[in-house]
Length: 471
Image 1: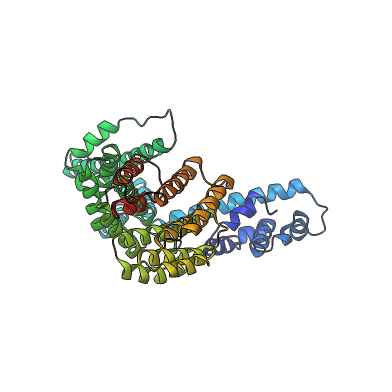
Image 2 (image 1 turned 45 degrees about the vertical axis):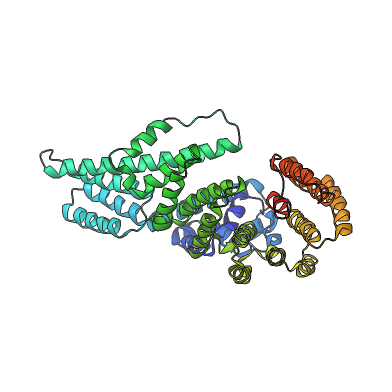
């Protein structure tokens, strides 16, 4: 049954969720009235890590001892268990949502006209709203449902509170709608830059205009996505980045972690785009964001730091000359890397650290320890070795590396054609740089212009430094 929907469903659950299901199926309804449902679930939970014991015949013999194997009977039972398990977890999720549970109680007491009970739950829910630090779109959706419920409970149209309840419900609904729509607009704009699509996001101009009216930008949930959309549509206007950056830095706790991480990466990507375009002032911005991401753990997903973020953080800090910080960071966060990447990521980035420190012999020693089995480490390590040979004036070794590097690029299938071309351009210009006569400044100027006019070159900044720094 390893490939069944039930088995794969159970495999994806947390330990706590499995315990919840196990307890749920121990109720008399299952253990006494429908024992096969409970037996199947308990058996599969017990053997999630031993799939060889979850073969269909083995499972059937356990659940239906003494009966001849009937695949259809087992399939029907598995489907029924899955349905009950899904309902149990959905109910558990609803109960754990404190807003949802309180709103359900408000509905129940309202329908029964139990005034004292209703007011008790209403006051309790209002206290929850006040104490809640998170103020994302979902918060305002619950606020809308709460005030709308209060309005419906107030049947007398002459009561002054009724208009106040309606106004509060309307305001909350506006914030929920605007923040949700602006968030989707940001996602749509981003996706359309990657994949061509005939789908169009409607009312973006109207949404942006509505967000600016009636002081709606006072709401973090609206303001953040408003500035993201503006940042995406007007990338040359840095004001939107600055406002979003300040807002996020001071109020990211108003978003749940997953959503805060989403906004965080909009900021990082904007900085990276500007840096790649040569606007090095954004190095300070992105470094500050990286430190914020580490301090708030937004960069840690499942308590792990991706090797790509590890590398990007090191690169930004090295370019700013924060060498001591990098040394500490490399060792402090090595254990947060995925196990299969730990040695390679640490060793390569430590080599890059020593490259910036101009300890080129140490770079060569460390690069010998980098495994070239993974394509991107192979790419990074070859590039760093290339620059190190150049800095050491090891031109014979450099020529040999250029040839082997080009052959490797021709063989590898894991890099896109545009990515391959950026490294072919690097090899081309390094070879021209080696052959450049120092006594002819006009040729140096011509090569400098050629590099500047070639848009896609790996390590372009380093190449330019070799000419401009020695010219």
